[in-house]
Image (cartoon, rainbow, N blue to C red):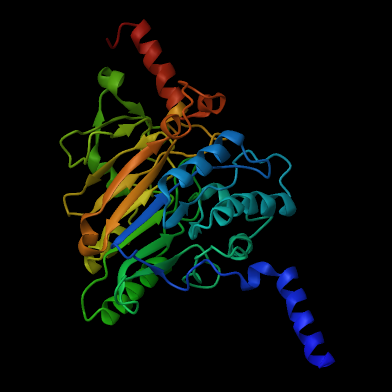
Length: 388
């Protein structure tokens, strides 16, 4: 009897010491709700340190409380590009602070990496970064595509009625870092494109030969985002953005397939190389499963459109206040998906000023935006009477 009592006491002590290892809460499978609904909240570019910005923290907490998402996705740039005194310990603490917010809210979450996360790989590898998140009960990030690529994977969402059927798939893709130039970014690598093709085929085979509708989230946009943008002359600069990449002016083309009436471009898209084909977009067309691809990276862009080939591409602007953004219009993107009509999901942006209730035009970090260069040149051109 004493042995049994000792065994029970020992087990109770284990549970007390390691509650997260045995805690119930995060589902074994993500599923649509009983009413057929599923809500995703996208936030990105928090770009923080181990001392999380209070405005960013309050925004995230308030948005989660209001929206009650079933899944949070974070497509990169969780770490600051000006993380002064960054050490492995402080980097891990910064990532853990974000994971703690989601975990405390009891919301499943998935993350991938952005260029500024990769900037700190010399101190903490992305594999180690992912392990920081995977220690949390509510992290649903899966094993990466290959060893050394922990940020690219698929998260299945199962039917509410048939728990063996994947009704929606979510791809999280790591777009790596700069390609050697000041502003150019590599995008995905060929190995990642091949993994995507294989995964798409695998899901299709398991779905009776039909492609599984999939949303994709990644940091850097594909260059096809330029289908919604026109190059204009400097005389039209009053409604355009100056690209720091090629020093050309660009503006949104309102007749290019834009969706909705809340489309804003505050900087020229900084995409994968315009003169190089990664093959990612072409692979999406080949497989036919991507019902929307959504990006981060360009903090003051928040537009969405359907390409001429039929794929929806869109942004969420920056969420965090330690990096530049759109003043009180820092944002998150909400996706409302119905199991009965997955492909016709609804999506919209939510803003700090509405969620938190605080209003202001600019925040101190906003003066670091690439758009400021265009503003300065535009002001000079106006002074010279070159533009009206």
